[in-house]
Image (cartoon, rainbow, N blue to C red; front, side):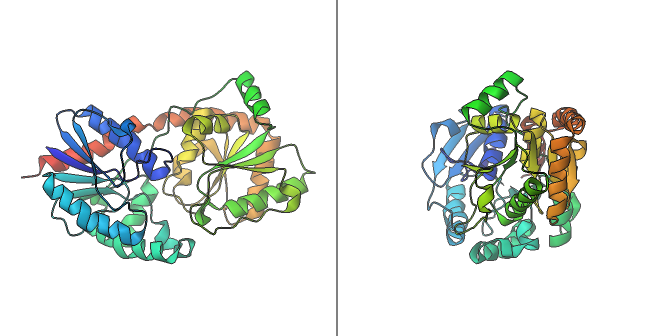
Length: 374
């Protein structure tokens, strides 16, 4: 059987959420199933590290699709034509989009529907694309995979999709995340000019709630006589023109690292006092699993999928209430017993999440549909 895969988010130098999901899942599927051939469709030159096996062929088709109008050209013309040329039996698309005009069976992953509930968080053109086409994609695909039970319910209710069409496959986390020794932690802190710190990981996107997190951290600092703890924000703006406001007195207490490699990110997470992760909408929340794998306690928002993922490894707050966020920081900073309990709970809970398991669940959906093809 010849299976096509949309791999346009596999980028050589800077992969974000969709890219890492695609990398971890597709690599395992290709390597675990040599009995099938795979055609990986890219929208730009391919890094050799994305050649996952002799049963995989990489095909580059244009144009580079990073704009809604280019999405339509890539999926409806370039990809549709390429699938026909390469005689694809079934397409797997990990990033939510697919080809509406193709008659080839397609399975896709919808990670979440944040754009349906908070449309103002996106630039208008992207908002138009997602809200216009994702309901059509959900109807077109033969099966939908999503990353949490929260997202499954949301997709079913918002788009009127029968839940039997939707499969949940939790995400995993990289092997770069693990507990480190006190010696290694002290060395890392010294090399980077850091003391104790809270860490946030994610794109600087309105729904990630970074501005309220900063406001709450400022409040926590002022109400607790400026304790010796900083806030490190790992990530970069999702959209151009976004602004984050920081009081001048906090400039020395808040550090922005920008994008980091997985290895660097692992060190920043494992060396933190706690992860402060308070989005008001999230389909899964991979940073939660990364922190749990490191034994790092978590302050989490209490909405959408986050309690489902973090379980008893976190304390929770209303992401719209800066006082609650600040109180959560205070509790984690002052209560060593609480941190120790959350750390142990996180290490235990992290065993529920792995990319091997994700890939296996995704493959079950694909293989079931393959068996039903004529």
